[in-house]
Image (cartoon, rainbow, N blue to C red; front, side, top):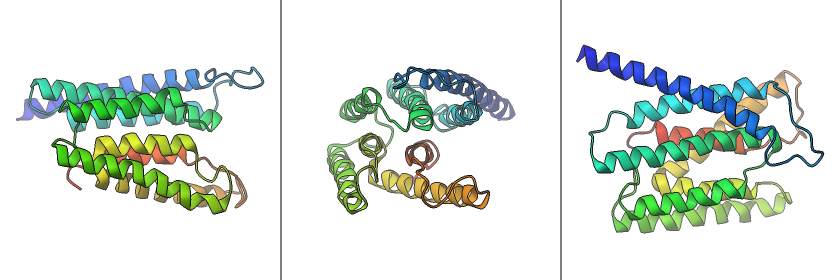
Length: 228
């Protein structure tokens, strides 16, 4: 028991270290891709450690949540799916911090990944056909509903990339995790915005991208919550 706990701790720390390294790579990628309109390449700044920390947290949470499952073909499949998805979330986190953009080239394949994972039985939370059907309906209905609600606030009130990301979150996690991820992202966004306003770093009229907070909420919903 003690040995097992020690091994689990080492693996979680290793996941955090590897995740931090991936976060640094993601930050450098986001500084160059997608290409900036002016052709510039951002130097290392405050975003670099933020993405590294996000990567470290994602790596540690991934190992802690899925590293201890019983060894089987399904377990390997689930671990691979969630590893790919988590790595992609870190890259999306970096690109949205840098360019306020969640590229289709990442968000759309994540939808396909979630669909395939659910269909072949290696989805982490959505399994039987009825669950898949409900998850699919909710995963499409919620983004459409949010888009319709955003229309009175003008173009850009919610990003198209955010909505596409929500589809894959709903397909992988199911309705409750999608809901809790949205709530967590909104709460974290509100707290951070209030903190920055208190420090006079931004004003009430400043644009703050929701994507990074949505991604944090998605990570919490998919990697932390056990049984919502």
